[in-house]
Length: 255
Image 1: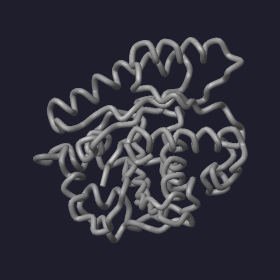
Image 2: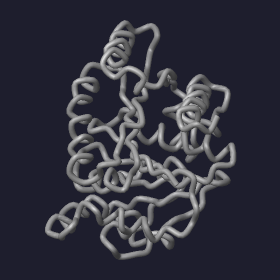
Image 3: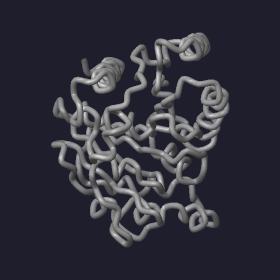
Image 4: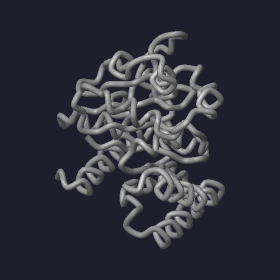
């Protein structure tokens, strides 16, 4: 089982979209996948058509020790794709964890009790480096970074890499950078091309060759509770995520 945190300190860069669509593509070829919604906003939960219910088992309960991880996982409409949903209470988890010993390792210990044999676990992290994100990274083998093709997103990338290295140095020596995914790319926009050139210059083969274009259908899909691969398989965004999943598997040595 490989655990991957999908993280970026900036919001609106495509973390959730990347998480659920890579998961859908992996599930489509028979891989058993679990997505963990670790964002209090619960966008991954909503995007899969699952209603957030106050008091229901969730990633919050798992993180603070109120429920077993196996009892909080739910099935989705996509075969081989399970979800650990979020809850609004997750926003308070940081305060509840701050004074605990070994607070950075709580989620890693909870994940050891996972009974289902998943091939991949993808964690959709909140847009900040807080205790929730640190718990996700400590439990992970690697971090995938979706990067919106605009200047302000690029500006925060270096700091994020420093944060990942700090977690690696202090808590999880095995943590690696899985790769950087360029999202919301516009071939008609010179800024997108400049950002792509700069990122590839500094991070080399850590940047996926596949780029995710700006696509209205991608933005529409969550309101229907479906990944773009199911909502509109033929659109440019869906085809890009299929190609990204293929490249991901190639890097994993599966294809």
